[in-house]
Length: 307
Image 1 (spheres, rainbow, N blue to C red):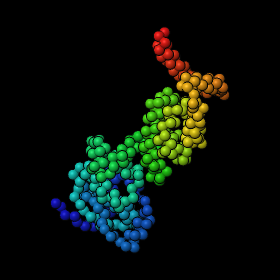
Image 2 (cartoon, rainbow, N blue to C red):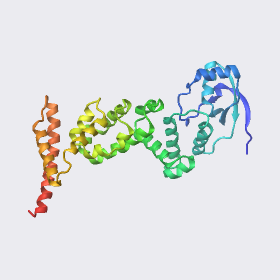
Image 3 (cartoon, helix red, strand yellow):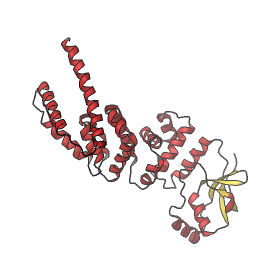
Image 4 (tube, helix red, strand yellow):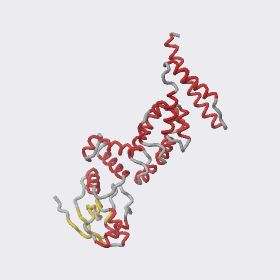
């Protein structure tokens, strides 16, 4: 086994690791510069040699701070080169993980890349390799896979979004697609996702709200449209409205409940109004879908009656 050795090299020969999840090395740079100026180098930057260059495994921020200070030569703790990309990612995580304050986004990126390198192995297997829970693996991989990174990177790193909220939103959107495919088709998944992200950012939607399946199960398209098109509307408020409506039908027979709901829907349809042709088109599209559902239900009832 090669011995680890400390050498001094030109800072121009030291390069950042392309697999490092953190691309911005300026975090707390002024503090790092003060430490280097006052205390010097307590330890070298961990690198391996690749051709004529030294690739960093640990010490990206110290390397960046040294550049800012105009230092020409830095100490490098030279270790053996990784034998594979999987080993390199593993060493990046283990060497840096305990020393560097990686953001949630950076840990998600690292976990996702480990999953790819390990040929998209099971979450259970990767959890064992990384010594973290299977649920952590699932949330990190799915969040990194699903969202456009420009939408979440900065806000996830700054704590505006949480990994739990983003992961739960994926499940919520999937359920919405299954329960209300026509609505999702009409408003587009991208628009609904962006609307929900804004509401999460504004604290109008919580993780507990998203975990409550009542909204999708009991809401009408009118409820959902009202919620999505009003940026200040809280999900909890709409849930309360829905549960309040359900109270009207308690203690009634099943048939009477159905008849009361149909009557209320008829009243709501008669009250519909619009101000421009765009609104009229949207209403017409939704009424057409409702008409199809009514025709299907009529056919089901006719079959039961033997007609």
